[in-house]
Length: 124
Image (cartoon, rainbow, N blue to C red; front, side, top):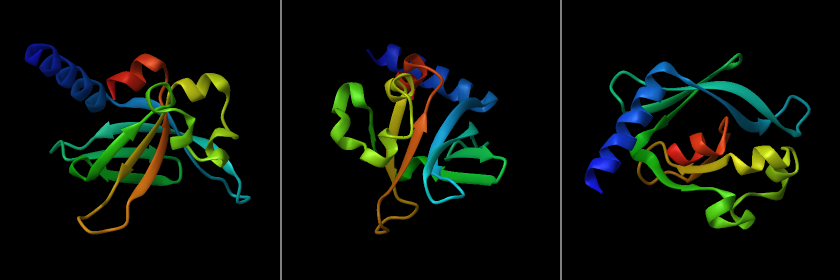
């Protein structure tokens, strides 16, 4: 089991070093919700996940991740209706909700990531 987990971690780290194409569900310019294409990478120190979009970037501290949810394992109650309503049924299968804080004691935030596939979602 330990060997399998180590291999999965190595595969994940390798995919993050080259970058993964994802969509991040966020507010659009009109105040609605929409999916923005992004490249998800890991910083050189392997302490932050970095999502780069045309509008800038978001850095998420790995140690700040509290929980990772998906509909298949956790049900659709863990994803707000406004997020679910703006993505396709296929995207819902690859959707992740990552809850995190930037620093201990700060308010918990959620980031909604649509991976390229269910396989990529599961590797996250």
